[in-house]
Image (cartoon, rainbow, N blue to C red; front, side, top):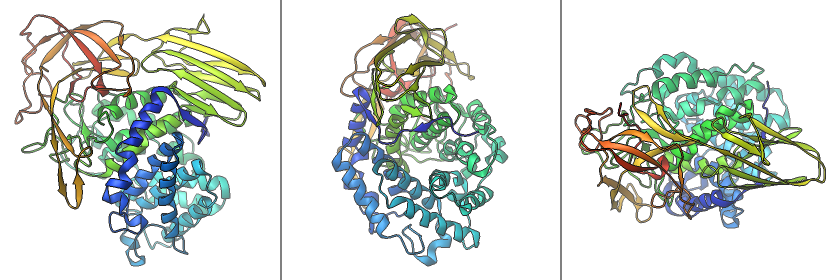
Length: 604
């Protein structure tokens, strides 16, 4: 089996609300890390004295597509400045990471995998003709060191061996040399076989391991689809097997899985690390392109519209390390954190709460989502994600006018100088589907034969219904389409400006605590079947002006606090007896409610 779909790189431009979202990111933390954050602006990757391992490659992996999707010359030039500096320090033998020769055996080569991945991203957008040879030299040097046993995979490199295959596949398409396949085999042989650790995913422990680390797990899901072809192996749907187990024992209502920092069970008060959200998204993008199975695209929408939005501030200047489905405060824990292996500041909104990996890595979330909107193969173009954007190639232009997921109307304007099949993915939850006014009964793909010279408009619309879904815990959550709804909690925002370890936090990239100042102890009776569309503001997923809402009936209960805390609600209500009359309340999208109650008991 080979990949069913390929990505357009540099041919997609976001429009409408999606362009607004990417512009907010560019004007926020992601677009300014090289100006304000020492680990990027003074990194060893560019000759400085700060971190010289994963942070610059992580940042470039998202900053580069952001710059090109927005066609922003300033961002492009700043990205090129970093690429030039990195290439300038490549040694004659191919080694490119910022460490001395004698330090290489102790240098975790996860950074080799990550920088070559970022360089492929740069090439895909810039077409910089230096890059194939640079990657060739890096990976041949890596192969020589591994083959001669001068180095071995360990720690992060061992746990993330599959990440090297982004660059390996890129290289093999261009050079087709046997040593590249041999490198792939060495990496898999030395890398972690996660199938040996599935039992460890079923019972969370307050113990840190690579095999249960939530980011490793999120990355691992794509391992087979990126490696099986070059290894000459059959695709066996390992992602399905692994995710079924992870979901059963660690899922959240938002379509994520817990991990604070390692897999943490199904409790709605356990956290999910932001790095795992964007890596999960990337795995889902690759899984959908490889298999063509719609379930991966639908899961991608859920992770994006809920999990990604819900853990980053509206202005995208601050983020959490850990988000939770039921999150009544985001404060510095005075004692032991509720999280299993993360620290006391992990759920603050800030510059680098708990640890700086997410500060650099969250940049990839929205740009890679946007570039996945359209896919292609030899004879077809597919609208995989029906978000507003423009596809322009030498032969085809497709403009999609849409407010999805806030509305379910899609207008495509197609112009073509060649024949091709145009396909539109329809989500499984779509109801009353109409294509150009005609009823369509199949929740899968709508196909159109486009002829050379065609200039046509295609209109598709469908309905979605608000539903209550039951969790294994016996609690319920509200979902409509790809969006989960929460009861929002009002909060007092407390700003903290300070300096630590040479890193300054000051407005707008300081730290914030969010302290609850409204009622949150509810159980739910019912929800209306339709949602309220309130309009999209300049901040698409605005906390103050949410674009959607759902009317629900609730009543107050004595929910209670988790034992030992006065800032964390009990995982399961201590008492579900109503203590008030039924009242109507407005629920808003999970991502818009920074403090929220998402999983709720149902009044029987």
